[in-house]
Image 1 (tube, one colour):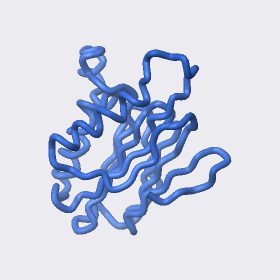
Image 2: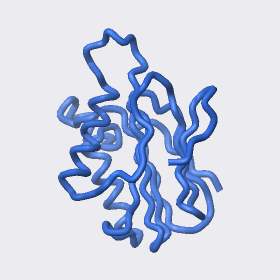
Image 3: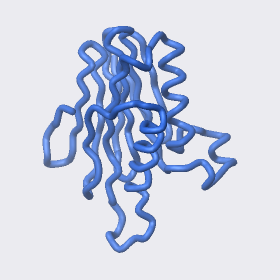
Image 4: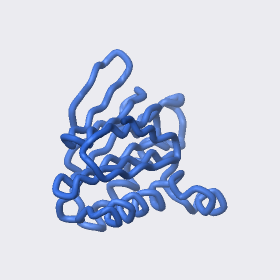
Length: 159
């Protein structure tokens, strides 16, 4: 079974079969988490770093923002039996797809909010493929916990 995570979306699954995947990670960040003991995995695909940018949008869809989506990803994983001590975290995305002269730096800001949240909560990032100027797809194999990143013309990379 394949579980598709759309932009500003999240999926958390308990079980040993299936793949969770998200596409079109440009400046967005994909956060993959996996607890090998509880066999719980999930992916969040967030668009913007901070919910203070648009409180109404954050209330309507908290997965749009890193600062609201990441805590919900972990809460859902904990509800399915995951344990903070055994969760493995991997990230992809955070590219600067728009014109390089842009002052917004959304990709970098998206990445920094993730690093800040994980640091504040004592969680290590075990693998990442971030930055640059290319789009990525991120997948998590629930049977093995393998996290892979694919980029156009670059093939697959295991994180």
